[in-house]
Image (cartoon, rainbow, N blue to C red; front, side, top):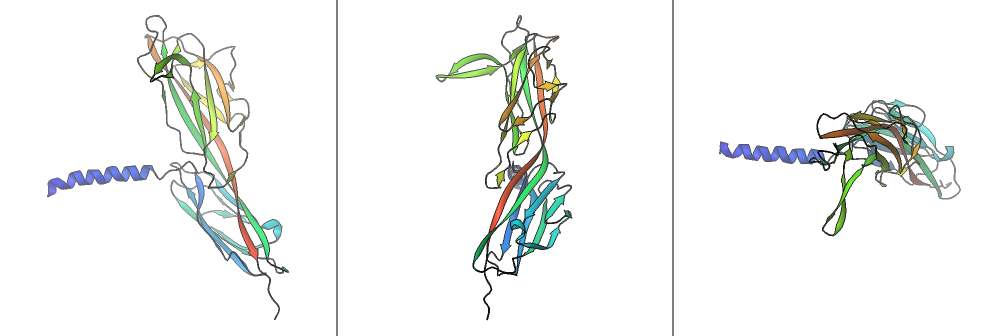
Length: 295
């Protein structure tokens, strides 16, 4: 019987790891367990809004904020509670939320004191948080003399979790035909400049909310380089390794690079891109205020 326990435990551990790996999401901050009661309040009565601010990523979120707009002042704030956060007006701000942690928020608002008939109102709210991303490309480099085709393959790291992600367009070394289709193979040649394009896109789920128009400001994206450098005199969107222009999402940055001085006939150029950003999205709640009949 004891001999059977070890395989069973291994299976359980492996399954646990798979389950844990699926917990993280690119929607780093979401509002979970959202409840509104009542949705059809009488004039002058209160409405309770409750939810949890959850970090769905694998890294701490250093700042997150939820800010309500109370139908242009038609509703008044009675009370707001922010678990481990700071309340300011009809908003909650959190300085750090650990991975997969949740912070409870409760908001009590008062409906207009008088309406002559059933009247619809919209309570809108904005969610914003600070995040960062990273991606890395490993590009084979051949000397072009002893070796013209690399033995190693181009590799790109997995994307970090987050709504904004980066993808590389590396230099094409050769095109081959596989199963009646053209397949690009990527590498560079030592001493010869090559162009790399970095594409940024928004992969957030529309169910979270409507994302604000997004731009990566200049200077927030930076390069980390190994066995490669920016090619002198050729176009590049990075100066001193930092981005020098705004990028509307979806959008791209590009640069020309060059590798030289390898002691062997093949090496690897490593290009990484770091980027910091503040992500924002909006959502709303529809309420209908009921008139109070005079008796």
